[in-house]
Image (cartoon, rainbow, N blue to C red; front, side, top):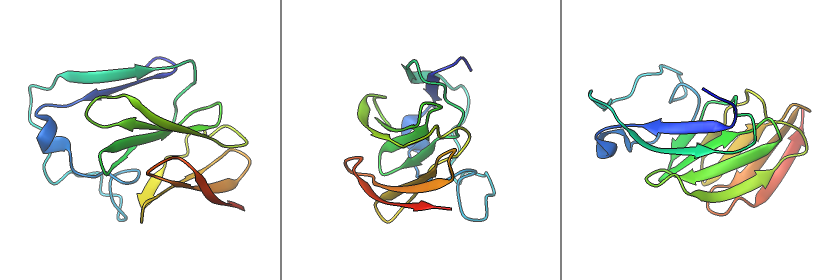
Length: 130
């Protein structure tokens, strides 16, 4: 995948609309979807930006969340790929994959700070330096 590019490839869209709120999908990290989409698959949308994207996305509540090398936690609409919001961390997010729970998105940055951000609007709730 090229720098700053994220694509959602699904068909049918409804079959894949289940939440995938953290890396590998669930707390046991099985990486298995209960209702995986069946081929043939097609690209539904793509999102591109100048930022490098290394983190795995999380999908929850109709949104896709991922971090960028430039330190932004990004939220896109699951169905359209349109930007919902961006939250700026102090440092790059790198490979840290977001996790979504209780209306919050949690992600760590490269300075060792964990950020809790409201999923609805991208407003920071708290940070914790590890």
